Amino acid sequence: MKSFIPYVLQFGNLTTQQIDVISSKAYEVTLHKDEHFWEAGKVVTKIGFITHGILRVFYYNNEGEEHTRYFIEENHLILDGHDGETSYTPSEYLQAVTDTKLVVFSKKDWKEISETIAGWDSIIQKITATYLRKKLERRSQLVSQDAATRYLEFLEKFPTLVNRIPLSYVASYLGITQSSLSRIRKNIR
Amino acid sequence: MKSFIPYVLQFGNLTTQQIDVISSKAYEVTLHKDEHFWEAGKVVTKIGFITHGILRVFYYNNEGEEHTRYFIEENHLILDGHDGETSYTPSEYLQAVTDTKLVVFSKKDWKEISETIAGWDSIIQKITATYLRKKLERRSQLVSQDAATRYLEFLEKFPTLVNRIPLSYVASYLGITQSSLSRIRKNIR
DNA sequence: GGAATCATTTGCCATTTGGCAAAAAGTGAT
DNA sequence: ATCACTTTTTGCCAAATGGCAAATGATTCC
Image (cartoon, rainbow over all chains, first blue to last red; front, side, top):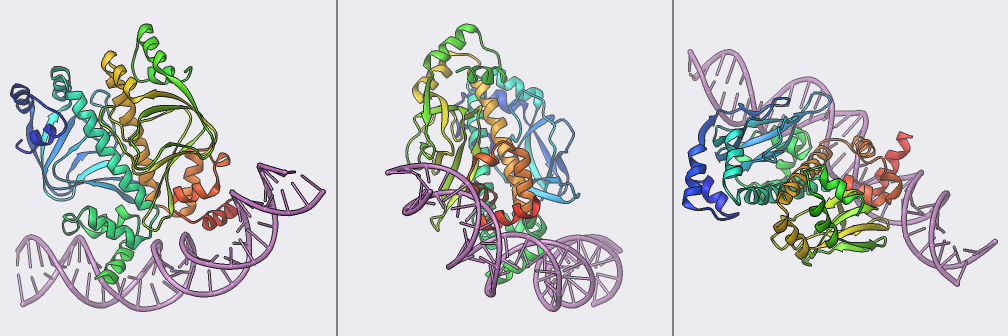
């Protein structure tokens, strides 16, 4: 829990009592490498905050190939697709790339927090908007550059990730084949 | 105003009085082709809803080349980057691709609406989350396919746009050169 | 109607990336 | 240390895309 509360407090203030209410509803979950936090076609029943580890969002294209949409790192709230109320059934998978620890809330408790704690919605709104916008920017820049540049940018933006993630995932995120990425890396060193 | 209110009502309910309050603060703006709604480095002072026309978001990369990040069509609220409260200075331009009409609110009035009308924030939050998520999905899929596929997908997703937008903008959105796009089109027909 | 301007297409060639398969390197369990 | 397995690198060649410049087509303005 230690890291979740400070994270939230960056986006708005909460009283000690409010923090207690929130904390009382949280529980800890460990995902082993390759386990899923969400699966395509299944209703999402929990909200998570990553304290350790890395997740990736991927989907299968029409040819049945896996494509990594993006990664979610430590100290990030997983709210892709959520507005907190409406039920959400993703069309993609959310999978642990490494062993991962999360602080988790049931969707029911999450809703209760939203109804109980004034200002909570506004905090979540800020987090959501900021988060999605960042992702969108990053993704946009990936479209218009050659593969080597995209890789270098990836290194810059996620310096801590490269050594913890299989190369194939990175390639798939960058939209190139694994072989191409391998060749690019050779030229860079 | 006719189209803005129904748009908002898709995401939540409002009383007639509330609608009147909102309407009273709106005014209409016309942008001519190539005029800007935002500019990089300038604080955003208004919120707009496009009733007619198309805008595009673009930025200059390190080489000074324009890159189109995406398009915003009729019947969409322009809330990229806004959480409604914090001041926002974009790093990109928001430009009219065609002559465009908007329903506009000053940021001050927008804030007042948010403070006056219960449920407003929740509506905006839903719109923001849905909107950004859609954009992110679209953008992600652009990364991992060859140019022809990307173009075909663009045609599917924005069937009404192609004939109203210069080819160069589409190419820049897809992350390819104008010549390549031209050749791709030749092969498709 | 014609000149000027802007948008799109085309040709030519260089470079990048993909596809496929095999080799090499790395990892983990026994 | 060895075997089985997974991940990463390479080689070879084909296909896709870029860069540049010129040609063609469209539009606007006088």
